[in-house]
Length: 197
Length: 197
Length: 197
Image (cartoon, rainbow over all chains, first blue to last red; front, side):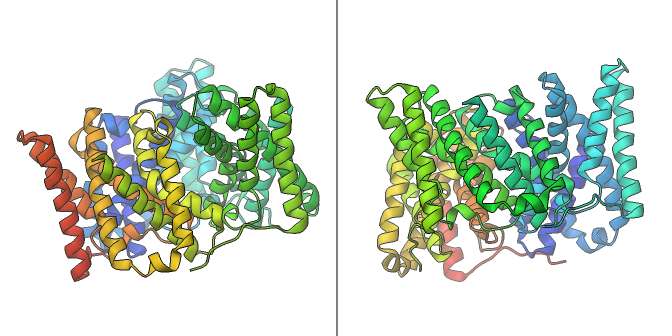
């Protein structure tokens, strides 16, 4: 799980640095977007839970995000051309962050719907802040099945825990649900309906 | 008061969901904007007061906002056509949120000006975050008398409490001030002056 | 130090009020941008440190920012024409806020890189929130050497403290570094490189 956590941090940091490159930001902008994309969601989650911010206790997360940003800047055209792999890696990171967010919320005895919100925040909050800082419409409000996969995974995870499935198995099923929904949505270009006015 | 609190939550959630529809967001975007508009201001207030976030203790607020969003999506053209009623309801919700924000700040022994800031945050903070997430200029910085009504109400409320007027009567007068200023501003299209450069 | 702190608050508040004028906001918008630019960075820093927000304990900061905004609105064309002085004052405020941010982080026993982040937040966070609220691209991600000066100053400051240089001398050297880098960057129009995609 720790490995998947660090993996998600790297993948999200890369996505932040790439957005900074596309927007013509300087090196500092790339560092900030990498850090914010990878750690922004968890930061808001920890603030709302009233607990210590995870990266202030373990600054290794900051170093990882900065390192990922530097490598991304150096190899940006190469990385940009691997869109398929980036999307797959992003789905895997998303699955891991969902489990982490729900687990942390449950350890604070949050209500089930609050734990879902914390899963969404952990998985999608960083990308949302990235988009606001980069001055672009938050992709998550328009683009295919993304948050929906987190909500489904977080719901099923809590259901499995409720019926006494061991936590390890429940977590793997939760991640499979998130990953599976993301991959199906990507392959078929599925989207949620929108209700125009 | 609890009734007015829930009423304000519903009205603000509707306003968030309507913005999401206008911007062509999907269902998830509508849920997030509804939740953020209704609860974002109170969340920032509670974070700054260093207390537990109100909706994490009482998740019923989350359910109400989501339910209001669903109903709004289903009846969006009908609701959209009732602009007059929406503005009236919004003014009433604003009045209630002002009292709630000031009360909470005073219960933490905040200074008077800090209590005014908390009233403004509670009443107008959610709409501000909604506008930032939707990528539109925050209406509150441009549009007629809105925050000013909160500031006036919050100031008069504290003045009345200071001269020992019972809290119930003070709260009603405060809400009447906010509501009255909003309605006069709407009817006469009053605005604050701006100082162009 | 207290003097420099209040000086920085005034300068940053002026910069917020000027942006509000340029964007055609009303008086309330000018107040909010002044407050947010001057105190937004320190607020996010204090939230993340899990400590009381500084201006809730000492509301004088709020009054100073509001007073600075009023004066700016009244004398806006005069102030706007003094760009050279504004940039110099901003650099001085930035230097002071860097020391304050790092000091506060170290008093909570943060790791060195976390203290650098807190210095950057204190110095540059307010301007970042100002730009997001005003709907403009955050200058700090594009414009010349700004955050870089904070990072260098915060790094050198901690290095000096680590080798047992007295805190007063270390702080003055830190501020000289930030100020010097800003002035050289302004005079020569230096910028960080960006990596376009």
